[in-house]
Structures are given as structure tokens and as C-alpha cells.
Amino acid sequence: MHYILQIVNTVEIINLNIMKYKTLLTLINFAKDYEKHADYAARLACDLNLKLILLHVYNSGVYPFGSASSINGGGLLYAQSNILIHKKSADKKLKELAVRLNRSFPDLLIDTIISEDFELSAVKDLIENDEADMLLTANNQYNSMFSVNADSYELIHEIDCPIWIIPENHNYNPLKQIVYATDYKSEDIKTITDLVELTGSFNPHISALHITDDPGFESKIKKEGFRDILVEKTAYKNLEVINALTSNSGNIGELLDEYASKNKVDLIVALRENRNFLDRLFKVSTTKKLVTKSHIPILIYHEAKVREKVQ
Image (cartoon, rainbow, N blue to C red):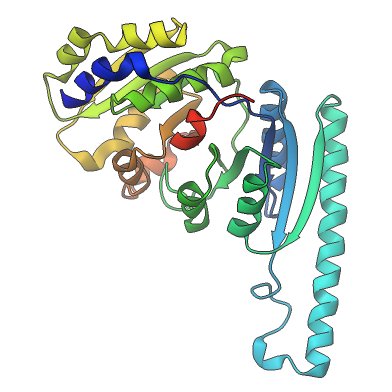
């Protein structure tokens, strides 16, 4: 009840200025099916009218060019030679990938970048220098429906821009059904406003979903008129407010999976500052049921970026 009243009491002073996104940055590591991942990024960039940057990051300190114990004079030359070979090969493959994508998407602006660095550092530099303002990375499906590898989870908490996490081998679908994980706070209104602007070309159905153990919460939401507030502030009517009841905070993955399967959800959206939701989502335990279910792209927003004004 506290969260709902917080919105009602503060909604009139919310600054709803939204971001104007220009560039989508995607990580390319030349793993299996990297071309499919790049194709997904290109299709998304086209539909969102964004420029695309293909980034490959390598690090000579961790790349298997030779162990530290073998780095004598000859070993150093051997390692440096292998590093140069890798860089040239990666640069060639990345440029060939850009050419192939441009054949399919001739109007898409594509840049390629090769960086000798750590992934987190390279991405952070590009975002902080305003060379990109959205990031897309792959989700390794080795743990559960919503698990991400450690590097991706680190990106979520360290990179101050919206981050798309796309399951490996996922086919691109226009964003027609979107679920936004809400805690019914004022920040949700700003984020949903930004989401409506970003995905407006799809005219998606947006479900603001809250998972609760309070059986009376739905009636409280209706009484406070949260949906009416959203419609008024976003000027967007194709949305609904939903509450999913659970007695077990650990089964959030199952609840989302069930809802997504029934409603053919194309994207799950969450605010990074909603740590309770994200921690519960990404730490869901592995089960055969989850692994065999269809996987869903996730978009993580960063509150501070939502608050910035369009230049």
C-alpha cells in the first residue's frame, strides 16, 4: 500500500522527459552462432531506428597466446605474433559480418570496433563517451530460463544504460507483447513512458506485472487507479496492470514462464533499481521445466538514464 500511495502523492511532480536513443552496441565474441546474434541486433536496430556498433573485445592477458611462465624472449615474440594474428582475423571477420548485414539491411548504419581490453571496461568507455547509449549482449543458457553469465550480470550493475539480454539462438520477433516488472513506484512511470516511446513503432501491448504474496493487493491497485495514472502520464492506452499471487518468493521464474507461455511474451522489462525483482529473477534455481521452456529477451533499464532530458 505504501508504494501505491507514494505514486499517487508524487505523480504530479514527476519529470517525464525521456531519453533519445541513437546507437545500439552489441558484443561479438565469435562463439557458435554469433552471426545469428548479430542478425538479431541488426533487426532490432532497424526497427528502433538506431545505428549499430559491432564490438569485439579480446585481452592478451587471458587469451591463450602462451602462459606467463613461458614468456621469455622467444615466448614473448610468439605471444605477440599470435595476438596480432587474432586481431587481424577478428577485424576481418567483423568487417565481413558488417558487409553481410548491410546486404540484408541496406539502410542500417554499422560501425565495427576491435578493442584489446576487458569487456566491461571497453563497453563502459563507449557508453561514458556517448559513442553508444544502449547495449545488447547474449544470455548463455546453461543455468535456467533467466540466468545470465557472470559477465552479463556484472554489465547490468556496472553499465549505466539500458541493456538487452538476448538468449542464444533466439529468433527475432517484433515486440508485440511486453511485460514490465513493476513495484508500483514513481520511477516505474518514467520508465514505462520511455519504453512506450522506444517501442512505439510496434504498438505493443504492455503488461505492468507485480508479483506479490498479498491476496488483497489487486483490489488496492484498482482502488488507487495505477492504470489510469499510467495512461494519463504516458498517453498510451494499450497497457494493463496485472498482479501475480505467490506464496513462495523463489518461484518468480515459474510464474513469469507460465505467464509468458500463455501470452506469447516477446520481452520482459525491469528497472535495475528494482534489485529485489532482479535478484529473485536471476537466482531462480535450475529445473528441467524452466530449461526446456522458451527463453525470453530481457531489457534492463537504468533509472538515472530514464531521468535525463532529450537533447
